[in-house]
Figure 1 (cartoon, rainbow, N blue to C red):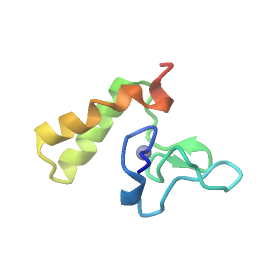
Figure 2 (tube, rainbow, N blue to C red):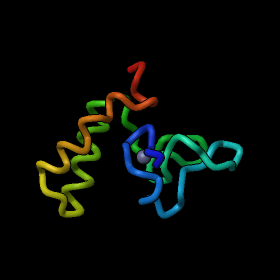
Figure 3 (cartoon, rainbow, N blue to C red):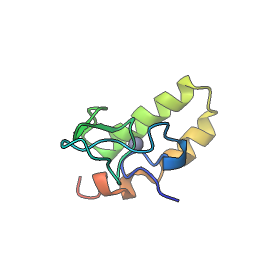
Figure 4 (spheres, rainbow, N blue to C red):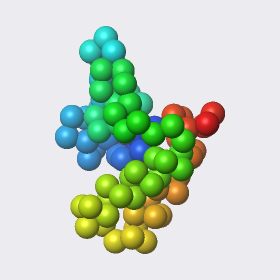
Length: 84
Ligand SMILES: [Zn+2]
């Protein structure tokens, strides 16, 4: 199973099955919610910002705080954030 290298969402949960690169091809690293036409949509510049962003999104969808917290803990390990 593949995960988005930005937010950690499984690709199987992505309705678009992946974001798009600037040349229109499918991204194999990032989901459609994070990445479109070669640009990150969330505007986050650090893993911490992304964790907060994802927590907020999950809370809006009714995800319990504890689960939202656990599922964002791995974000700093993903490719997009490794060098930040
Ligand atoms: Zn993503």
